[in-house]
Image (tube, rainbow, N blue to C red; front, side):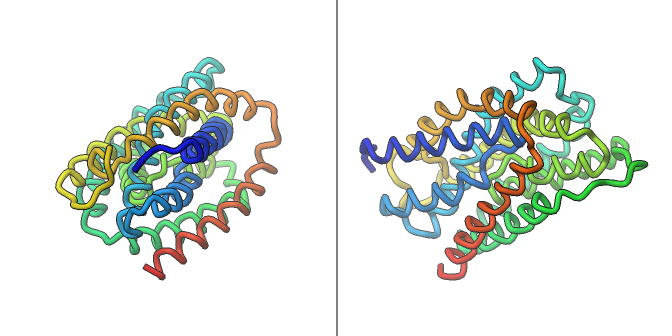
Length: 271
């Protein structure tokens, strides 16, 4: 699979877009990245079932770099709730390993595509409605946050997302300020991505018909180009998050997600 100039351009454009959104909305970019990587890998001759799995795994691997860049920008503004990170992270790591090492390897790519489509559609609806929490609601205790982290990590492992689409609504539902929730979600992206990537590599090492330059389920050329571009764009998005009407941008982004969710659902049913 040769990296032609047009392919490099497509991957770079994807990295720029997802990096900006990671900083702006506190997401790892997986919701946007997975459908487009599926299209790109399918166009390079990778079997549809395998293309979905590799898109999810490669998307997650890029989040390691995006989250580092994004969280540095948010931390400088004092927006990261490290107390929440410490309580959610242990559950996230355990949930991620269960998802990426066990369930991900066992499920067919078409089932993952259907699940991805449904999950993104649900996330888009939550984002579009932007419901406000009850003013008295607070974050649960250590045990509750451990359980919530496990759920976030497990789902992230199945769909290749950094968890922002679960953690940001969860935190705002518990009356964490939106800018703190976005910043904290960016910090949580690293343990989610690191744990899941280990699972994707181990579970994919013995898979047949992987394209050249693959490491388990991870497509290294895509990872390098997307990560390089997203790393430099995440701080730009983080800066914009403190200046732009994020609520309005969420609704626009939700509409885009509906289209991508429909595409992945179609790929799953057709597969």
